[in-house]
Length: 291
Ligand code: ATP
Image 1 (cartoon, rainbow, N blue to C red):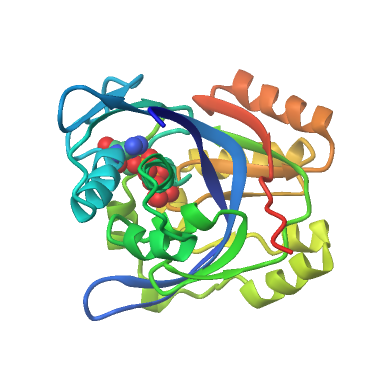
Image 2: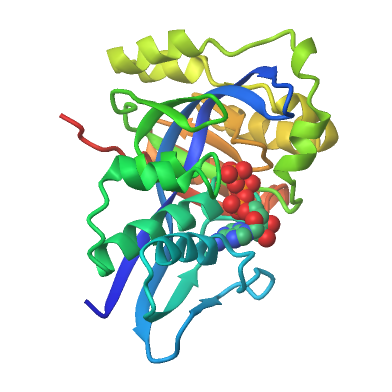
């Protein structure tokens, strides 16, 4: 195999809770993760020159060892003494630094691709064990679908698939670093925690409205306070028929859940004309049948 093309899917957080701040500075979380059908496209190709070369459609992204696709490829190639040179072409569509896990998913997908291309024979859980060295969300991006993530995000339990619906995704023009949000979170003073166990039960029962009623993200206390545009986008989506809306991850991306595609498209158009957002998508759940 000389070339392989793969999709790296983004995620939303249907719920995100911070349980406590650990002594080592990491935050212990409980999150319901959901893959959506938005993806970056990655092509890995064997090359005559040695080493790893990264090309991307976004000029502001690093192409050296600071790009997560580079790190992911290097990790496996070093461990398995792969001398063959490779080129990685990364076409980004998932908004960057947005709370949709794009970088983690790119890294996860490159690991899947290198495993196939060089016939390393690693099983999913063996890839996940290695992926966590790159980032806490990388194991989830290998597993995909609907999952409960605990620990620092790496302890995963698969859940029944989330009931399908349309998802409007809006990225405002601001960029927010995950580090800033966690540093400013008052983890021990939170007065509200999303009902994650209740949401797991609702997902199990296939009750979309009950799940939507429990959307919650404690990181909104930092990001939405700093950037009121997040609240404005949520209100606009709900006014236009979303069952509910929430900020994903550390933000600033906001998503709304809709039962009807036309209603979703109309809500998206209204946010677009109001000037509140910069990037706009209508997507759906990406679910995996694990039976
Ligand atoms: P998360 O939901 O996991 O918090 P995020 O949306 O906040 O993810 P990403 O888009 O994954 O953040 O990336 C954040 C930073 O990582 C960017 O500022 C970028 O410079 C760097 N980065 C390195 N590699 C990549 C990549 N392949 N794609 C996107 N960003 C990357």
